[in-house]
Length: 185
Ligand code: AP5
Image 1 (cartoon, rainbow, N blue to C red):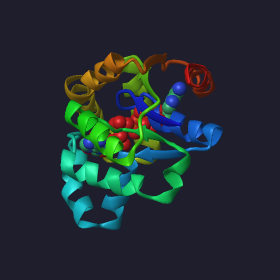
Image 2: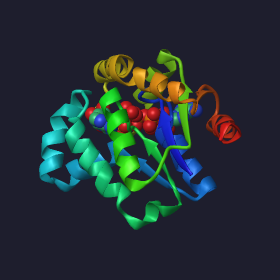
Image 3: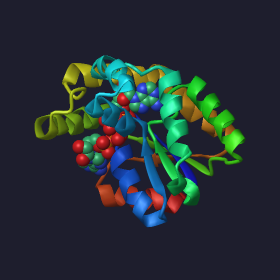
Image 4: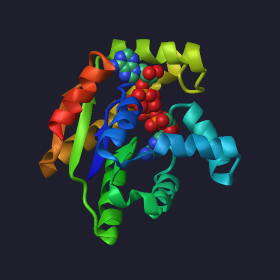
């Protein structure tokens, strides 16, 4: 099974993908995690991406597509995967379709988590206090939400037009939301 998990920053994509991957025995692919790993490793790509990520902007489509393509060519994706944080704009959605056509694959379901903005700000403020992620300051979170509304929200309509989108209430406990996702799948 191949899934796309959509939703604004802090909507719970990473949390839910980690649970779904175990439940469905598939791989969790987060472009944010791949980028943070590149930053931590000090690769050329990581050096280019860091300032963009810290500002809450999107890293260039070409760089992220290359990371994703490399990841999708690893053998552990054979049983399926959850994409978390990709695609992030319409150009990436189209690039993903082209990549999947070359790999003779398709997306089975796109799931969009719906969460109130103030709940998002509260969740990410707590994470900032606990983990100190460099893009979780309130001003950068507000900017990430703006980038989401402008660039990523149209991707939800893209999958709706394909007839594979389910919107999921992302408010409540982690277990409740996970059950809603499983019911939708
Ligand atoms: P990315 O890592 O994808 O971050 P994001 O989309 O902003 O998402 P987050 O990780 O903040 O939130 P999430 O929805 O995964 O929620 P989580 O489960 O963590 O991207 C970071 C940056 O990388 C981007 O800004 C961009 O620069 C770059 N990037 C990444 N992909 C890119 C792409 N495709 N193209 C270009 N650039 C790209 O939960 C958040 C918090 O809430 C956690 O602390 C969690 O414990 C808590 N929580 C979760 N669920 C609940 C709940 N139900 N109740 C209470 N707390 C909860």
